[in-house]
Image (cartoon, rainbow, N blue to C red; front, side, top):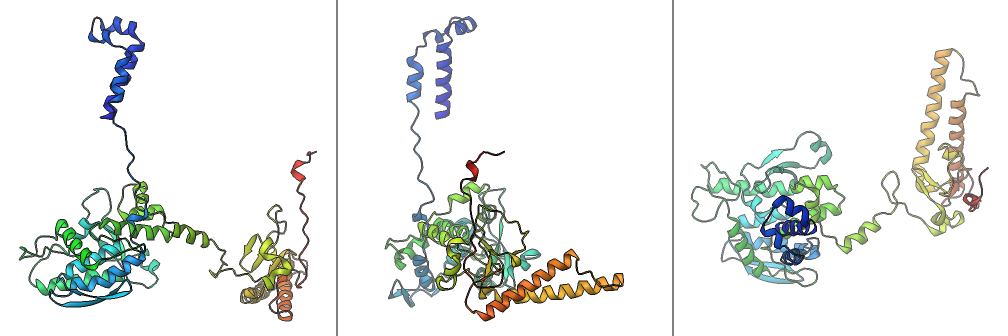
Length: 434
């Protein structure tokens, strides 16, 4: 409506500004009575566009405190009606009556594990699991993964399968076995059939019944978040926000998150990610340096004060650190072992020992091949041989210095001495160039 009103306003303003041309083309018409007040009147009829509240607030995120209470209360749904269940959640023990709906228990658990919509869980087909093949098996590194096909009913172009882990597979297989025991001679179309008036299990669990059942369970469980606010389990979309937020916080790329969420655009996927201050702090702390082997780079003031590593180390190498300031470029061609500003310590001892052994084996192997091919030994002035022998000798000096001074930082020259003085011309960029 606002677009139509804006179009009429623009037309009226145009005709008002071009009265003579309009009169020549249109002739006598009601447009002759048009004044400057008409566009203003039509413009005021447009409704004000109120910005909808952002979806990236923490109220749509279920924190770990609430999730722990939900999982603790899940057995209440599976126990037969009339049975009493002792539940320990929120720092207290309660005795709650069983609800006799194990399907609802598994549906809620699958909703939390996969982040699917409530309708996609209700419409999930019975044969929803297929084995993961190809690169998915290699990427899982031995963990059980499978492809889960859910009931996609919202976006036609969106995918309807995701990868799930062994925990989600166990929930689905338990539900399948439960149905086979109850309907042994039926061809079951849905994984979660309707509870009542469904003798042949041909109807799926209704979304309205699902919401009402969760609302009753929410009142019974009385789940609260870390701030003490009640969490309504019937607002199932909160679990979708929570799953995608956790995946994003684990570093999942946006396009992969979009594929997992089943969205047509990455913008919609980002609406589901809660921008939590707690994760912002964790992400900042996660930027701490790591070595090439994945272990954290830990500095000790006692070990490295002499070389000012905490203040001067700018480049982190697989076998040590480089003290060359950022304003200077390396002229060594990455020959770090023979460089005076290269420094290492005994935390890299295993790497340096392995490098020394491999360098010695490489020299011996290549010199032997040269002798076989040319019938004479490799010349002492050979460029390759000179560089490799320099690396071997530097490694030997480094390891010898480490054994002589354990726990101390060692420079590339091979002796634990004072910091290498590096002069920086801070006024060089101000000087006129010849």
